[in-house]
Image (cartoon, rainbow, N blue to C red; front, top):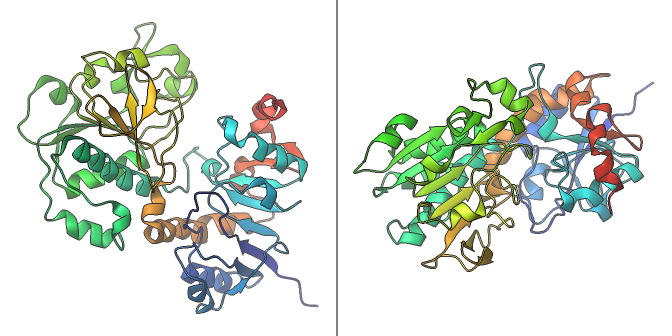
Length: 404
């Protein structure tokens, strides 16, 4: 007796503005089916995806109008509530684990429709390290956009947008001719996103200096310093900084960012922010003459988060918002009195093919095999909801679900 195949469907991204990334690219779909004969992949037709339907068909992957008969549905961004299919397994970035207000209805619908929701952001190894992300690409594009914002703000550097390039290879080739004028850049964080920022600094031959030298010295060239949490936060008791304690109880720490914003032109914020942690600075501090930062690439893009002036996400179409520190409102950017903020929440979509290929590699070789196991600890850790209930690790979202 021939067993029925497990069907995996790649959905058409429905969120507005549209996202053209895909979780698995055509050649990887083919490889998955070859490696797992009991799996069949179908792709929902899309006219916005960075890989065209015919590219999937050329690899022998069926392109269909609907994928609602599939067992597992793979997306990238949040699925619009009205498009969720009852009692299916979904993988996508839900952006609910920090109780984000704009996605409350999404999680409520997931519970109502008894959907098994597996969040990419929660896929970790046994040490708690994330196994899959678009972080490197967010860092690369975020750093470029930060320089673009500062350059347009000051008139000292003219850069094209990343989205104007065919791919990363073409962008890197273009960097050969760019000379970055003197400026001081701070990168916060030391994970995938921050390291993506560093990659751009190196490609543009911007000099790296230690945090100590950054504070102590003057420079005649463009320089950057990369800050880890220990460079930014201090324990309220005065005791030595401990990273694990900071992760566990960030509310016990104070933020000492004043010494950095007094000497910085461009800030690239690439650090994960826990809502229990103090913000880098206050809106009142941003009004001070001591606040020298003129452009911020808030790559983490937590609304009213570590950068309190990130009042909203910006878009690829309109990447920069102006923040008036006196009136404390969102205004047109690039004015003499504004602090300009780039806060695009889907940055990798500016290099969608490169980003999708990298993401799909991990999907192909790690996530899909784990997903097909009868039981996987990795998948269990990332499952937010199942059969109409929150999983134990996510029961803290209960009050979030009950709000209207």
